[in-house]
Image (tube, rainbow, N blue to C red; front, side):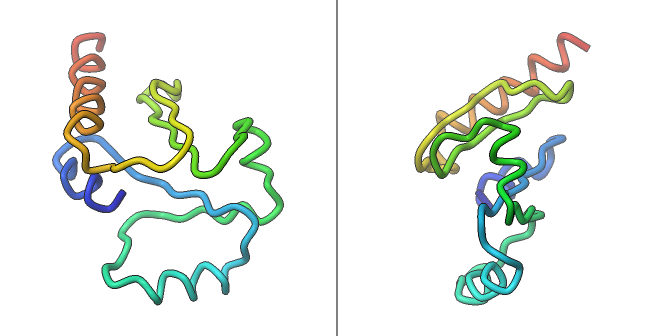
Length: 101
């Protein structure tokens, strides 16, 4: 996800991760073990409030939300966030929003 965020740094795009069920200390331990830092916010959903509200059925689940707050892409399971087809799909959303606006 960090590579995708870096690749789209010139676009109105943000990555927000949601950690489900773990507390801040557990998440911090995990992040400290990573070789590369993550430069996007991580929401802690310790009590699964967000998970229930968004009706997440499996982890990981990815949502791409447009500027109007509508889910335009939902994927369950792991994804290669730097895959050309995923990057192209997100770039197409930018173009679509520019032409709609």
